[in-house]
Length: 107
Image (cartoon, rainbow, N blue to C red; front, top):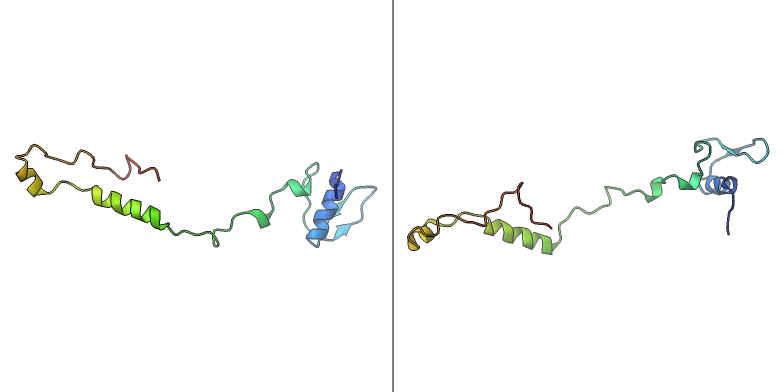
């Protein structure tokens, strides 16, 4: 079914939401609860039915992401002292050390 004008769409929207339609002069529709501003069709407004509900959205990490984060945490540490002694201080620090704010993991 194709609706050509905004009045029919507004009536359809009102019927789907069980709103009462007040009688108005020739071809104009006024809703008793909430009507859109003049010139705006009711079906162009964002509906609460289609908005994301934070209570139903998951906040859990996948196992793959947890594994990547765990590996990055293990790698992000200074070199042990025995490594410095063994290499005669040729390796003095971890060149790939990552700061949590400056360098991100790009997950």
